[in-house]
Image 1 (cartoon, rainbow, N blue to C red):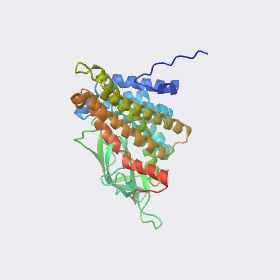
Image 2: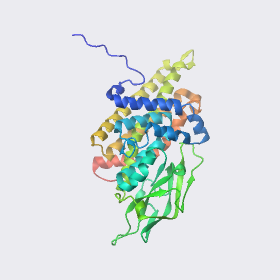
Image 3: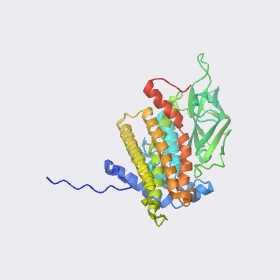
Image 4: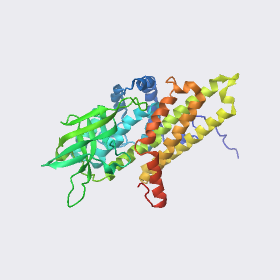
Length: 400
Protein backbone atom coordinates (compact mmCIF):
# COMPACT_ATOMS: atom_id res chain seq x y z
CA UNK A 1 0.00 0.00 0.00
CA UNK A 2 1.34 3.39 -0.99
CA UNK A 3 1.34 6.20 1.55
CA UNK A 4 1.35 9.91 0.83
CA UNK A 5 4.74 11.51 1.08
CA UNK A 6 4.95 13.91 4.00
CA UNK A 7 5.64 17.53 3.14
CA UNK A 8 8.95 19.02 4.17
CA UNK A 9 8.53 20.83 7.50
CA UNK A 10 8.28 24.62 7.26
CA UNK A 11 10.69 26.63 9.43
CA UNK A 12 7.71 28.94 10.13
CA UNK A 13 5.33 26.18 11.31
CA UNK A 14 7.44 23.08 11.77
CA UNK A 15 4.67 20.98 13.32
CA UNK A 16 2.01 22.26 10.91
CA UNK A 17 -0.06 23.63 13.78
CA UNK A 18 -2.02 25.66 11.25
CA UNK A 19 -3.63 22.43 10.05
CA UNK A 20 -5.28 22.09 13.48
CA UNK A 21 -7.28 25.27 12.91
CA UNK A 22 -10.71 25.53 11.32
CA UNK A 23 -11.28 27.52 8.15
CA UNK A 24 -12.90 30.32 10.17
CA UNK A 25 -9.96 30.43 12.57
CA UNK A 26 -7.47 30.64 9.72
CA UNK A 27 -9.54 33.43 8.18
CA UNK A 28 -9.35 35.45 11.40
CA UNK A 29 -5.62 34.82 11.68
CA UNK A 30 -4.93 35.81 8.07
CA UNK A 31 -7.21 38.86 8.18
CA UNK A 32 -5.54 40.27 11.29
CA UNK A 33 -2.10 39.41 9.92
CA UNK A 34 -2.83 41.33 6.73
CA UNK A 35 -4.14 44.30 8.73
CA UNK A 36 -1.02 44.34 10.86
CA UNK A 37 1.26 44.13 7.82
CA UNK A 38 -0.49 47.05 6.12
CA UNK A 39 -1.45 49.34 8.99
CA UNK A 40 0.96 48.67 11.86
CA UNK A 41 4.29 47.21 10.76
CA UNK A 42 5.39 50.12 8.53
CA UNK A 43 5.12 52.65 11.39
CA UNK A 44 5.40 50.80 14.68
CA UNK A 45 9.12 51.49 15.21
CA UNK A 46 8.47 55.22 14.76
CA UNK A 47 5.52 55.18 17.16
CA UNK A 48 7.63 53.31 19.71
CA UNK A 49 10.51 55.75 19.27
CA UNK A 50 8.18 58.73 19.68
CA UNK A 51 6.41 57.17 22.65
CA UNK A 52 3.05 57.60 20.94
CA UNK A 53 -0.01 55.39 20.73
CA UNK A 54 -1.48 55.61 17.19
CA UNK A 55 -5.06 56.69 17.92
CA UNK A 56 -5.71 56.79 14.19
CA UNK A 57 -5.84 52.99 14.29
CA UNK A 58 -8.92 52.92 16.55
CA UNK A 59 -11.64 53.18 13.85
CA UNK A 60 -9.78 50.67 11.69
CA UNK A 61 -9.54 48.20 14.57
CA UNK A 62 -13.24 48.68 15.26
CA UNK A 63 -14.08 48.08 11.62
CA UNK A 64 -12.37 44.70 11.85
CA UNK A 65 -14.57 43.83 14.82
CA UNK A 66 -11.67 43.25 17.22
CA UNK A 67 -13.07 45.15 20.22
CA UNK A 68 -14.72 42.60 22.50
CA UNK A 69 -14.63 40.12 19.62
CA UNK A 70 -15.09 37.13 21.93
CA UNK A 71 -18.25 38.54 23.57
CA UNK A 72 -21.79 37.75 22.44
CA UNK A 73 -24.28 40.42 21.39
CA UNK A 74 -24.16 44.21 21.88
CA UNK A 75 -22.42 44.63 18.53
CA UNK A 76 -19.63 42.18 19.42
CA UNK A 77 -18.47 39.49 16.99
CA UNK A 78 -19.03 36.46 19.24
CA UNK A 79 -15.83 34.80 18.01
CA UNK A 80 -14.39 31.65 19.56
CA UNK A 81 -11.67 31.77 22.19
CA UNK A 82 -9.21 30.28 19.71
CA UNK A 83 -10.05 32.93 17.10
CA UNK A 84 -9.57 35.66 19.70
CA UNK A 85 -6.23 34.13 20.72
CA UNK A 86 -5.04 34.02 17.13
CA UNK A 87 -5.94 37.69 16.74
CA UNK A 88 -3.92 38.49 19.87
CA UNK A 89 -0.92 36.60 18.49
CA UNK A 90 -1.00 38.47 15.18
CA UNK A 91 -1.41 41.84 16.91
CA UNK A 92 1.49 41.25 19.28
CA UNK A 93 3.63 40.06 16.40
CA UNK A 94 3.63 43.76 15.59
CA UNK A 95 3.85 45.17 19.11
CA UNK A 96 2.69 44.32 22.63
CA UNK A 97 1.26 47.81 22.98
CA UNK A 98 -1.23 47.28 20.16
CA UNK A 99 -2.39 43.95 21.59
CA UNK A 100 -2.58 45.45 25.08
CA UNK A 101 -4.80 48.28 23.86
CA UNK A 102 -7.32 45.85 22.37
CA UNK A 103 -7.03 43.42 25.28
CA UNK A 104 -7.75 46.08 27.91
CA UNK A 105 -10.69 47.36 25.90
CA UNK A 106 -12.29 43.95 25.33
CA UNK A 107 -11.10 41.57 28.03
CA UNK A 108 -10.97 43.98 30.95
CA UNK A 109 -13.24 47.01 30.51
CA UNK A 110 -15.89 45.51 28.22
CA UNK A 111 -15.79 42.12 29.90
CA UNK A 112 -16.31 43.68 33.34
CA UNK A 113 -19.50 45.34 32.11
CA UNK A 114 -20.54 42.25 30.14
CA UNK A 115 -20.06 39.85 33.06
CA UNK A 116 -21.05 42.01 36.02
CA UNK A 117 -23.03 44.96 34.71
CA UNK A 118 -26.77 45.55 34.59
CA UNK A 119 -28.62 45.29 31.30
CA UNK A 120 -28.88 49.08 31.25
CA UNK A 121 -25.11 49.42 31.67
CA UNK A 122 -24.47 46.89 28.91
CA UNK A 123 -26.79 48.67 26.49
CA UNK A 124 -25.32 52.06 27.37
CA UNK A 125 -21.67 51.16 26.94
CA UNK A 126 -20.93 47.93 25.09
CA UNK A 127 -22.19 48.85 21.59
CA UNK A 128 -20.24 52.12 21.68
CA UNK A 129 -17.13 50.33 22.90
CA UNK A 130 -17.45 47.67 20.19
CA UNK A 131 -17.60 50.46 17.58
CA UNK A 132 -14.55 52.16 19.08
CA UNK A 133 -16.59 55.23 19.97
CA UNK A 134 -15.79 54.80 23.67
CA UNK A 135 -12.45 53.54 25.00
CA UNK A 136 -12.20 51.92 28.40
CA UNK A 137 -9.54 51.20 31.00
CA UNK A 138 -9.42 49.02 34.10
CA UNK A 139 -8.35 50.44 37.45
CA UNK A 140 -7.31 47.78 39.97
CA UNK A 141 -3.56 48.15 40.61
CA UNK A 142 -2.34 50.84 43.01
CA UNK A 143 1.17 52.18 43.62
CA UNK A 144 1.58 50.11 46.78
CA UNK A 145 -0.73 47.22 45.89
CA UNK A 146 -0.01 45.29 42.72
CA UNK A 147 0.22 41.58 43.45
CA UNK A 148 -1.89 42.09 46.60
CA UNK A 149 -4.95 44.03 45.38
CA UNK A 150 -6.88 43.13 48.53
CA UNK A 151 -4.87 45.83 50.32
CA UNK A 152 -6.16 48.60 48.05
CA UNK A 153 -6.65 52.03 49.63
CA UNK A 154 -9.14 53.43 47.13
CA UNK A 155 -12.39 53.86 49.05
CA UNK A 156 -16.02 54.31 48.06
CA UNK A 157 -18.07 55.75 50.93
CA UNK A 158 -21.82 56.09 50.92
CA UNK A 159 -23.26 59.60 50.78
CA UNK A 160 -27.01 59.48 50.66
CA UNK A 161 -27.91 57.44 47.59
CA UNK A 162 -24.50 58.05 46.00
CA UNK A 163 -20.96 56.75 46.37
CA UNK A 164 -17.97 59.06 46.76
CA UNK A 165 -14.66 57.58 45.53
CA UNK A 166 -11.23 58.70 46.69
CA UNK A 167 -7.84 57.19 45.88
CA UNK A 168 -5.63 56.44 42.93
CA UNK A 169 -4.76 53.63 40.54
CA UNK A 170 -1.40 53.11 38.85
CA UNK A 171 0.05 51.52 35.70
CA UNK A 172 -3.30 51.70 33.92
CA UNK A 173 -3.16 50.91 30.20
CA UNK A 174 -5.34 53.24 28.09
CA UNK A 175 -5.96 55.48 31.12
CA UNK A 176 -5.09 58.78 29.47
CA UNK A 177 -7.22 58.15 26.38
CA UNK A 178 -10.13 56.34 28.03
CA UNK A 179 -13.70 57.61 27.95
CA UNK A 180 -14.57 55.47 30.97
CA UNK A 181 -12.71 53.65 33.69
CA UNK A 182 -13.75 50.52 35.54
CA UNK A 183 -12.50 51.37 39.02
CA UNK A 184 -12.41 48.87 41.88
CA UNK A 185 -12.75 50.32 45.37
CA UNK A 186 -13.44 49.19 48.90
CA UNK A 187 -16.88 50.21 50.14
CA UNK A 188 -18.03 51.16 53.64
CA UNK A 189 -18.14 48.36 56.17
CA UNK A 190 -21.60 46.94 56.77
CA UNK A 191 -23.20 44.52 59.23
CA UNK A 192 -20.35 44.65 61.72
CA UNK A 193 -17.64 43.85 59.16
CA UNK A 194 -14.16 45.29 59.71
CA UNK A 195 -14.04 46.47 56.10
CA UNK A 196 -16.50 46.63 53.25
CA UNK A 197 -16.64 44.62 50.05
CA UNK A 198 -14.63 45.53 46.97
CA UNK A 199 -17.00 46.77 44.26
CA UNK A 200 -16.57 47.89 40.65
CA UNK A 201 -17.68 51.32 39.43
CA UNK A 202 -18.11 52.78 35.95
CA UNK A 203 -16.44 56.20 36.02
CA UNK A 204 -16.93 58.39 32.90
CA UNK A 205 -13.88 60.52 32.15
CA UNK A 206 -15.72 63.82 32.57
CA UNK A 207 -16.89 63.04 36.11
CA UNK A 208 -15.95 65.84 38.48
CA UNK A 209 -12.91 64.97 40.62
CA UNK A 210 -11.61 62.33 38.19
CA UNK A 211 -8.41 62.93 36.23
CA UNK A 212 -5.53 61.00 34.73
CA UNK A 213 -1.81 61.55 34.50
CA UNK A 214 0.28 59.65 32.00
CA UNK A 215 3.39 57.80 33.16
CA UNK A 216 6.27 59.01 31.00
CA UNK A 217 9.92 58.08 30.41
CA UNK A 218 9.14 54.42 29.77
CA UNK A 219 11.49 52.22 27.76
CA UNK A 220 8.89 49.46 27.49
CA UNK A 221 5.41 49.59 25.90
CA UNK A 222 6.23 52.99 24.49
CA UNK A 223 3.54 52.74 21.79
CA UNK A 224 0.96 52.39 24.55
CA UNK A 225 -0.64 54.81 26.99
CA UNK A 226 0.11 54.03 30.65
CA UNK A 227 -1.46 56.26 33.28
CA UNK A 228 -2.32 57.00 36.86
CA UNK A 229 -6.02 57.41 37.67
CA UNK A 230 -6.67 60.02 40.37
CA UNK A 231 -10.02 60.15 42.17
CA UNK A 232 -10.68 63.10 44.48
CA UNK A 233 -14.17 62.89 45.98
CA UNK A 234 -15.65 61.52 42.78
CA UNK A 235 -19.42 61.36 43.30
CA UNK A 236 -21.22 58.59 41.45
CA UNK A 237 -24.86 57.52 41.47
CA UNK A 238 -25.95 54.07 42.55
CA UNK A 239 -26.33 52.99 38.93
CA UNK A 240 -22.57 53.41 38.39
CA UNK A 241 -21.96 50.28 40.48
CA UNK A 242 -21.52 46.97 38.69
CA UNK A 243 -24.32 45.12 40.51
CA UNK A 244 -23.13 41.56 40.00
CA UNK A 245 -19.60 41.79 41.40
CA UNK A 246 -18.64 41.87 45.08
CA UNK A 247 -15.18 41.02 46.35
CA UNK A 248 -12.01 40.25 44.44
CA UNK A 249 -13.55 37.43 42.42
CA UNK A 250 -14.95 39.97 39.96
CA UNK A 251 -11.75 41.83 39.03
CA UNK A 252 -9.65 38.65 39.16
CA UNK A 253 -11.96 36.92 36.69
CA UNK A 254 -11.51 39.89 34.36
CA UNK A 255 -7.74 39.52 34.70
CA UNK A 256 -8.03 35.85 33.81
CA UNK A 257 -9.80 36.84 30.58
CA UNK A 258 -6.99 39.24 29.70
CA UNK A 259 -4.26 36.80 30.70
CA UNK A 260 -5.67 34.30 28.25
CA UNK A 261 -4.95 36.75 25.44
CA UNK A 262 -1.39 37.16 26.71
CA UNK A 263 -0.86 33.39 26.46
CA UNK A 264 -1.23 33.81 22.70
CA UNK A 265 0.06 37.33 22.30
CA UNK A 266 3.52 36.78 23.76
CA UNK A 267 4.11 34.11 21.12
CA UNK A 268 3.47 36.66 18.40
CA UNK A 269 6.37 38.75 19.68
CA UNK A 270 8.51 35.61 19.95
CA UNK A 271 7.62 34.52 16.43
CA UNK A 272 8.64 37.86 14.97
CA UNK A 273 12.00 37.72 16.75
CA UNK A 274 12.62 34.10 15.73
CA UNK A 275 11.78 34.75 12.07
CA UNK A 276 13.91 37.91 12.04
CA UNK A 277 16.88 35.99 13.47
CA UNK A 278 16.36 33.12 11.02
CA UNK A 279 16.46 35.38 7.98
CA UNK A 280 19.38 37.37 9.36
CA UNK A 281 21.36 34.18 10.02
CA UNK A 282 20.97 33.13 6.39
CA UNK A 283 22.22 36.43 4.98
CA UNK A 284 24.76 37.76 7.47
CA UNK A 285 28.25 36.77 6.28
CA UNK A 286 31.14 36.20 8.66
CA UNK A 287 34.32 34.22 7.96
CA UNK A 288 33.16 34.07 4.33
CA UNK A 289 29.90 32.19 4.99
CA UNK A 290 26.45 32.83 6.52
CA UNK A 291 26.40 32.72 10.30
CA UNK A 292 23.49 30.30 9.97
CA UNK A 293 26.01 27.70 8.85
CA UNK A 294 27.71 27.68 12.26
CA UNK A 295 26.66 25.03 14.77
CA UNK A 296 26.16 27.45 17.65
CA UNK A 297 23.81 29.63 15.62
CA UNK A 298 21.83 26.61 14.44
CA UNK A 299 21.47 25.44 18.03
CA UNK A 300 20.04 28.82 19.00
CA UNK A 301 17.53 28.73 16.15
CA UNK A 302 16.47 25.18 16.96
CA UNK A 303 15.94 26.00 20.64
CA UNK A 304 13.87 29.04 19.70
CA UNK A 305 11.72 27.00 17.32
CA UNK A 306 11.16 24.26 19.93
CA UNK A 307 9.86 26.64 22.58
CA UNK A 308 7.82 28.69 20.11
CA UNK A 309 5.97 25.67 18.75
CA UNK A 310 5.47 24.12 22.19
CA UNK A 311 4.02 27.40 23.39
CA UNK A 312 1.67 27.53 20.41
CA UNK A 313 0.41 24.04 21.23
CA UNK A 314 -0.19 25.10 24.84
CA UNK A 315 -2.12 28.17 23.67
CA UNK A 316 -4.22 26.18 21.23
CA UNK A 317 -5.05 23.53 23.82
CA UNK A 318 -6.07 26.16 26.37
CA UNK A 319 -8.19 27.82 23.70
CA UNK A 320 -10.00 24.57 22.97
CA UNK A 321 -10.55 24.13 26.71
CA UNK A 322 -11.95 27.64 26.98
CA UNK A 323 -14.30 27.05 24.09
CA UNK A 324 -15.35 23.79 25.73
CA UNK A 325 -16.02 25.42 29.09
CA UNK A 326 -13.34 23.49 31.01
CA UNK A 327 -10.66 26.18 31.35
CA UNK A 328 -9.81 27.29 34.90
CA UNK A 329 -7.79 30.26 36.11
CA UNK A 330 -4.95 27.90 37.07
CA UNK A 331 -4.72 26.73 33.46
CA UNK A 332 -4.40 30.34 32.32
CA UNK A 333 -1.62 30.87 34.86
CA UNK A 334 0.15 27.82 33.39
CA UNK A 335 -0.03 29.37 29.92
CA UNK A 336 1.00 32.88 30.91
CA UNK A 337 3.91 31.71 33.06
CA UNK A 338 5.31 29.39 30.42
CA UNK A 339 4.63 31.33 27.24
CA UNK A 340 5.75 34.77 28.40
CA UNK A 341 8.87 33.38 30.04
CA UNK A 342 9.84 31.40 26.95
CA UNK A 343 8.91 34.24 24.59
CA UNK A 344 11.27 36.56 26.43
CA UNK A 345 14.05 33.95 26.22
CA UNK A 346 13.45 33.61 22.48
CA UNK A 347 13.71 37.39 21.99
CA UNK A 348 16.92 37.56 23.98
CA UNK A 349 18.43 34.67 22.03
CA UNK A 350 17.40 36.27 18.75
CA UNK A 351 19.16 39.46 19.80
CA UNK A 352 22.45 37.59 20.15
CA UNK A 353 22.18 36.35 16.56
CA UNK A 354 21.76 39.90 15.28
CA UNK A 355 24.63 41.17 17.42
CA UNK A 356 24.79 44.98 17.54
CA UNK A 357 22.04 45.27 14.93
CA UNK A 358 19.70 43.67 17.44
CA UNK A 359 19.69 46.72 19.69
CA UNK A 360 18.48 49.18 17.05
CA UNK A 361 14.91 49.95 16.00
CA UNK A 362 15.84 49.02 12.44
CA UNK A 363 14.97 45.52 13.62
CA UNK A 364 12.05 44.62 15.93
CA UNK A 365 13.93 42.55 18.48
CA UNK A 366 14.96 45.04 21.18
CA UNK A 367 11.49 46.58 21.00
CA UNK A 368 9.85 43.22 21.62
CA UNK A 369 12.37 42.40 24.37
CA UNK A 370 11.59 45.63 26.19
CA UNK A 371 7.84 45.16 25.79
CA UNK A 372 7.91 41.60 27.09
CA UNK A 373 9.66 42.75 30.26
CA UNK A 374 6.37 44.52 31.05
CA UNK A 375 4.22 41.62 29.89
CA UNK A 376 6.19 39.36 32.25
CA UNK A 377 5.07 41.57 35.14
CA UNK A 378 1.60 42.86 34.38
CA UNK A 379 -1.63 40.98 35.01
CA UNK A 380 0.20 38.75 37.44
CA UNK A 381 3.96 38.51 37.83
CA UNK A 382 5.76 35.28 37.01
CA UNK A 383 6.23 34.80 40.76
CA UNK A 384 2.49 35.06 41.42
CA UNK A 385 1.64 32.61 38.65
CA UNK A 386 4.26 30.23 40.02
CA UNK A 387 2.54 30.37 43.42
CA UNK A 388 -0.89 29.88 41.84
CA UNK A 389 0.39 26.69 40.25
CA UNK A 390 2.14 25.71 43.47
CA UNK A 391 -1.12 25.99 45.36
CA UNK A 392 -2.89 23.97 42.65
CA UNK A 393 -0.29 21.21 43.10
CA UNK A 394 -0.04 21.13 46.88
CA UNK A 395 -3.29 22.64 48.10
CA UNK A 396 -1.23 25.08 50.17
CA UNK A 397 -1.32 28.85 49.53
CA UNK A 398 2.18 30.29 49.84
CA UNK A 399 1.39 33.95 49.12
CA UNK A 400 2.05 35.13 52.65
